Length: 258
Ligand SMILES: C[S@@+](CC[C@H](N)C(=O)[O-])C[C@H]1O[C@@H](n2cnc3c(N)ncnc32)[C@H](O)[C@@H]1O
Image (cartoon, rainbow, N blue to C red; front, side):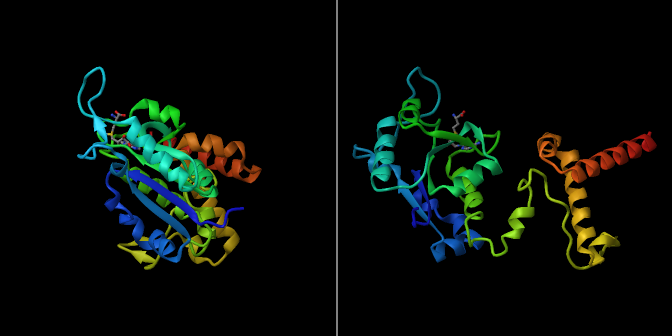
């Protein structure tokens, strides 16, 4: 087993953007403690002309520029030869949508090598030749892959051992068990006339746990029924009963509204 910390190697034409937000809070403290490592590598260092060009016009015409396969390949091969850990990932709006399942998978590995595109993107041949996995952070287009790389890294780093103080908080948050998280409350107990749900003040941990589970099921059913279908396939009979009860409650309330 490797004793190297989990490492993110980022290939970018803007290495000075890193660590950026990753230098703060949980990720920043963990970086300072050596719980993970970051290497931001300038793709321009692998250009061969005096302008350090990384892009050229697209064959076939059209707007914008495309990142050259030879320059990208030299950058990738160099970091791999130096021992960069983990799979090659190209951040791309065409990619597989990033989910907590993929984040867990990446966080369990030795690290990631993230290629940040700019302009119109990257020449297809280098993606094929170096077998990049493509990941998207959502159905919208950013102007570059750097913010997407930061999203991937942040999501992975908080799952690494020792990064989040109380690991129990990772088990209960959204997506951890296939559901969205239950609502959270803190002081004051009454704010603008709104009271915190009574059960949370009861001190009865079993009732609190059941209430939170119920709310997580209700919120997931209302906002992300796609997640609920998957979660219920692996759910306990108590959860299925809770869900059926909240569905009955929901349709009764809807009928009363009519
Ligand atoms: C302007 S975009 C290129 C978009 C590309 N022409 C297309 O239509 O798919 C430039 C770079 O931003 C990054 N990017 C943009 N949107 C992204 C997303 N939703 N997820 C991940 N990376 C993204 C990619 O690295 C991409 O190469």
